Image 1: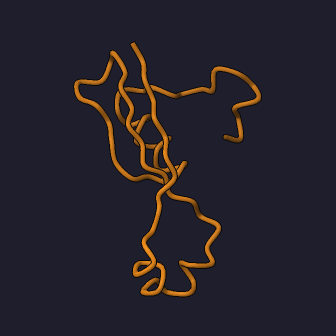
Image 2: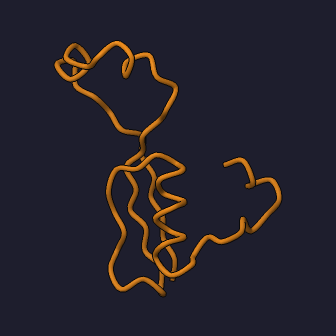
Length: 75
């Protein structure tokens, strides 16, 4: 069984006001992820960038070595 839930990270008004302008205007997106896979010992969850999530999945037993479909290459 495989399950993935991805949510974009929401910031409170106070967090946005305290955020440095460079981070506020950044195009780097951060997502909260819950991922369950039969080959993982525990559920993978946390806040990641897309590339950080790919790296974590590659490091966690070689899952996500290649995209399943060609259109997912740039995801």
